[in-house]
Length: 286
Length: 238
Image (tube, rainbow over all chains, first blue to last red; front, side):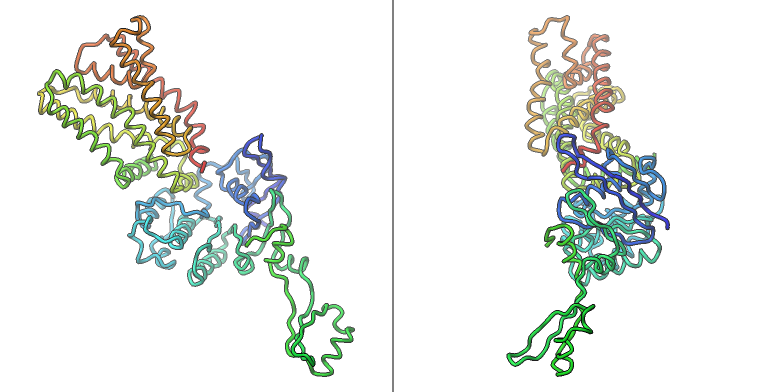
C-alpha cells in the first residue's frame, strides 16, 4: 500500500521549558483515503497538522511524504498540498475573487476557481469584499482556497464548521469527489457525523498522544456493544429491554416475547463515534 | 522573480486597500503645505527633517499597521503554505514599504523645485531615501517582533523615536564632543537627516560616507541576523 504520509516517533515541543506537546506519534496515512485526525481541543491535532504542512519544523522523529523526508522538501511541496485552515485566512479588504486570483497566481497550476466558487454558493458574492462575508461564506472561501492548486493532498481543518446542512452537504460531496479522483484528504474535526460519513481511517489524539488509529467500522466493533434493543408490550404499557446478540437464541425472556407476540420494535444497537470519542479520549467533545 | 513581483503587486494593492498609502500621502501633503508657505531658508532647514521623518519613523508606523492587519487576517499563514519562500514574502514587504517614502520625496522635491526654484538631485535623493527607509524598516521589524499588538508597537516606537532623535538635538547644541559625533549615525534617523541635508548644504564627505555606511550596515545586519530567522515564527504567532 502506498502512503501519503508515514509518521514515525513524532515528538514536538514549542519550547524546551514547556515540555512536549506531541509524544511519540506514529501514523500511516494511506494514499487516496480520507483520514480523520480527531481529538479534544488542545490535544495536539493542530500541531500535528502544522508539522505536516511544514509550518513547524523543529520536530523530532521522521515524517515522510510519499516516501520522501519532509525536511528534504522545499517550497515545491506546497504545489502538491492544499490547506484549509480552521479560521478564515483572507485579505478582508479584497473581494473573494481577488483573494482567489492572487493565491492562484502563486501556483504553477490551478483549478477554475470561479466555477468552484459558484458551486459552493459564492457566485453572487464573488466580487464582494471578504470583510462583508458571513462566517459560513468565509469558511466556504477557505475551502475553495484549499482546492485551488488541485493538490494531491488536502488538509481540511473543520471544513463544515459553522455551515448550514445544505452547504455542508455540498462541501462533503466535493470532498468525496476529490477522494474519487485519488486525492488524500486529511480532516481535522470534532463533528463525528462528518467523520462517520467521510473518513476511511481515523486517529484519536489526546494530550499529545496517539490513543487509537483504525477505521471507523473496526472501532465500532472494538468499542461497540453488540446488543439488540427491543420494545415490547407489557401490562403497564410499552417497555424496552437490551439483549446481547450472542445470547439471543438462548435467552428465555426474548423467546417468550416472540412466542407471545409482544415485540413492537427491534433494533440492533450501534455505538456511535461520539461515544467512542468519549470512551477513547475520556472527554466530551461537544 | 515573477512571484516576487506578484507579491509586491499584492502588497502595494493592499497599501491602497488599507488606506495606508493615502494616510502616508496625506502626511506628505502636510509637509508640502508647510514647505510651500515658508521661505527658502526655512524650507532648506525643514526639508531634511521632514523627509527623514517620513522615511524613518512614519515608515515604522505604516509597515506596523499593515503587519498587524495581516496578522489579524491570518494571511501570512496562508502565504507560508503556498509555493513562495518566506524570504520573498519579506522582500516584497520591504519593497512595498518604500512606496510611501518615494511618494513623499517626489512631492517634496516638486515643491522645492516649483515653489523655491531649487531642484534637488532626484536620483541621489531617491537613493538616500531608499537607504534611510530600509534601515528604519529593519528597526521596525524588531519592534514588531517585540510587540504583541499595534498599541504595544506604538509605545515602543515612542521610546525609539526619542532615542533616534537625541543625536539631532545633542549634536547641534555641541553637547557631544566632535570626535564622538559619528556615533550619532548609530541612529538611522540622524544618519538619514545628515545625508538628506547634504543634498542642500555642503557636508563633510567623510561624514556622509560614514552615515551611508551605517544606513547600509544597520539593515545589513538586522535583516539576516535577526529579522529573517524569526520572520516565519513571529508572523505565525497569534
